[in-house]
Length: 116
Image: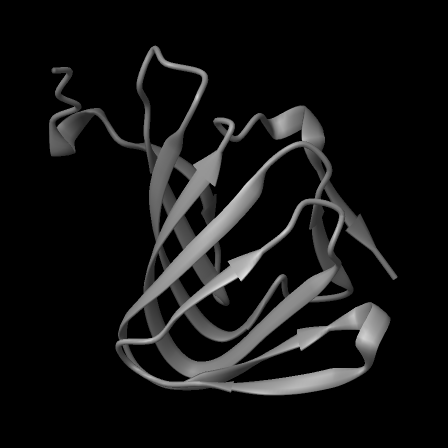
């Protein structure tokens, strides 16, 4: 068992549109973070993770996710969970959404990209 106390979380993003706090573990198999989105994430273009799959759980709020390749908007509701496979360009929209994000393998900043 390994514990990451709340005072050990690391800021990944903290701006007017979104805030992501990651809870670091020494394991490479999995990482976890919390996120608060106010309007849009990312604030422009689309996010793509080239190495990790992600599961999102919406703790609070409602919104939509746009999958760029599909030009499709999918409604997201409080309590929903959704899976984003690596290499999938996406953007999340909502007035205020609070989420938990699980990454497998662990998220690495070098594998995160923004695309138009």
